[in-house]
Length: 232
Image 1 (tube, rainbow, N blue to C red):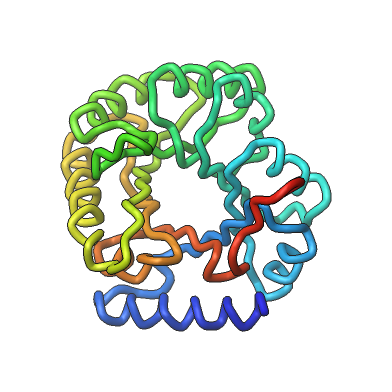
Image 2 (image 1 turned 60 degrees about the vertical axis):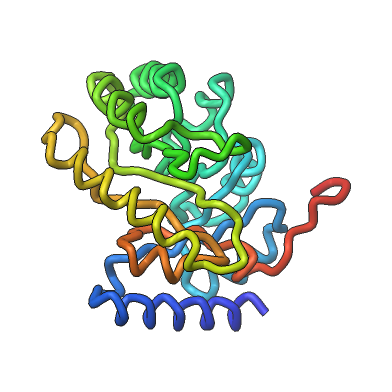
């Protein structure tokens, strides 16, 4: 099932890139594997996936220890400061940096472990009360302040768009994130580049690609519905 689902997702990514006049190589597919067993991740790995996204630090660590070491692990869930130390040297990218205090902790742990950690600033572009992330103006000041911290490198922006029935409803939010990244890039801030736009999930990744996403986070579309029951 995983292999067939991946083929379908890949087809849709290629078609979205074609519609947007983009090269397929500009978009990285992250397989969001939260709550999924190692056996399913191994299926995706066998099908060529090397980018996996997790929401919980402990779950990432458990899988990190038993899966091949050429996998790039993405922390995409809300990150508590006391869990940062476990990600050092293991997370290829932390997508969900939404405060200066969190950036400072990542910086401190990175220096302690003698690594440079790539991060994205999470922007709650739709202003949803149930979502984490900064607003547009806060994002700019957060980038400016976090850019001065040692041991981290700001690589772009991430957003989680609203859950909608019609993906077109999120086009405006993806466009706003893209515009924000252009505005930030124009400031030419040291230690900041806006090469990554992490936006779009199973329900709307095609629209996100059309609006400039360079990373899309697809879980259900690859692994099927999640089991949040006991032990998940």
